[in-house]
Amino acid sequence: MQQVKESIPGYTFGAKEVPTSPVSLQALAQLKISVGFTQDDVRYLALAGDVLADQTKVIVAHWRSGIIASIPHLARHSRDPDAQALPEYLARSNRRFEQWILDTCRRPYDQDWLNYQQEIALRHTSVKKNQTDQVKSTLYIPLRDIIAFVTVMNDTIKPYLGAKGHTADDVEKMHKAWRNSMQLQIALFAKPYSDSKLALDEW
Image 1: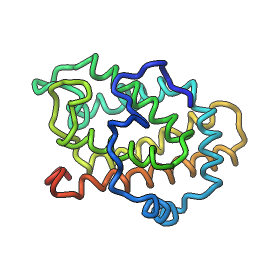
Image 2: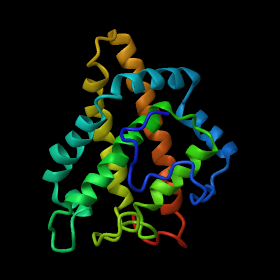
Image 3: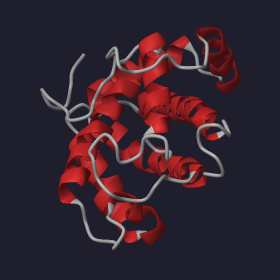
Image 4: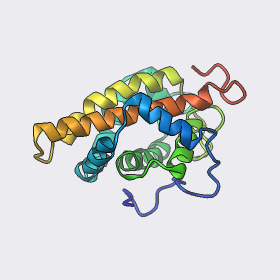
């Protein structure tokens, strides 16, 4: 599995310290059916991984610097309590964000992937936010903002999918596969947010 860097701070995919997801593989299979996620999506996500592999840094910069940075209620989540920039935190989390693109496209959606979905979600809640990089920032990112921003990621990823000269049909199929994965992942992200013992009132 290709990584955007040989070493990514805080990236623990498949590590023993990542707890087992409370979502079962059977529930994941049912979610795939609900979303309409098929083997064609798996195939076209793999193609998307090839297309996006050398564009991840630009894509994340587009999302973070080009969009999020200009929206105060989103930008604050990577800044300190005085709204000052945390450049090292941003750099570290950007690398993980880049790797997430590759993981979305190239990882099998197996137990390790399912476990890491829970881990990523928890790192957006008050349970684990800021712990990975030992920073002081907002306590959590509201689930509503995560769900809403998925639309932005879906819209803005398409030009990158079309950047390598693939047919319009292939680009559409890659884009569909990406959107289906985003819907699947956001459904999994909702799990810790909906557990009142973990993330109380963090909608």
